[in-house]
Length: 377
Ligand SMILES: *Cc1c(COP(=O)(O)O)cnc(C)c1O
Image: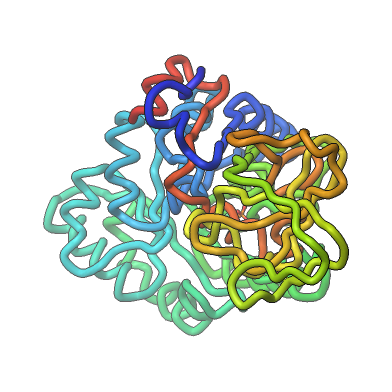
């Protein structure tokens, strides 16, 4: 599907999201963790890729479980996916949001005794058994009941009488470090806390743990980054490519300053191209004088500071007429992966994805039955 007509073709950058690769990643993860099920984490607009087309493609591939961060994300996803899939809300409930959560038929993650009480009161008032996930803190100190709270809940389980607890949940602090000490300790603590509670199904693993630690799989894994091609793994495909367009090229003499603060000085005669992607598009300023674009196999270093709407690259290594007005260079793709861009910028792929800008022309490839509708949604 081409989104190339109209205003989109005038954009300074082109973002392509390959829904066929996304679905292949889902299937590969599902095969890797079976018999556990794969839940798709589509919070933050599916890490910037578009929750509506991403979730529609995954639902079409058989995904039945979706995690979002908050109720607003859940409500718009419910409208998109219809009543069938389970939509879990990681941040749980605010006082006053219980009725809306029930109306959207979401499954809140209950992270504290207070959230548990709010949802149980709602269930009693509605004379309904409401679904929930109960999170326990196994050492990350972010969300979930403490060990003491688990013990007191286990001693007075009537607090749970009106709830249908679907999963016991926790989250790993250092999963990408492998099955080192921290994850092993958290798994042991998860076991210890689970033993005090009814035998609910369990969910513990994110992408990294799903791929590297089968002991963390439990019954449901919660996977975001690996679906979106942000994890280096032979079996997973890249999903995102990004190209920026040339606005202008010039040949500079030795010693010319480039960009704000003139932080780059040409060493010899250099050919410089200005690309229409800047930090307002989510291209990190940390890549000033550090990152690169690519054309074919040729690395084109960023020179000077990344500006708001543009940046300069040294294209001296290319033939003089290789790049003209409107031509594209690769920013994320086969020569420079998402993970490599993140590393050069001193950050993580999650941050690069979730900051992808809104000015890019977005193109969705494959996946959804009606990709045009998916893009417009
Ligand atoms: C974001 C999130 C995930 C997904 O993490 P990935 O590393 O992207 O797979 C899973 N669980 C929780 C609680 C999260 O907040």
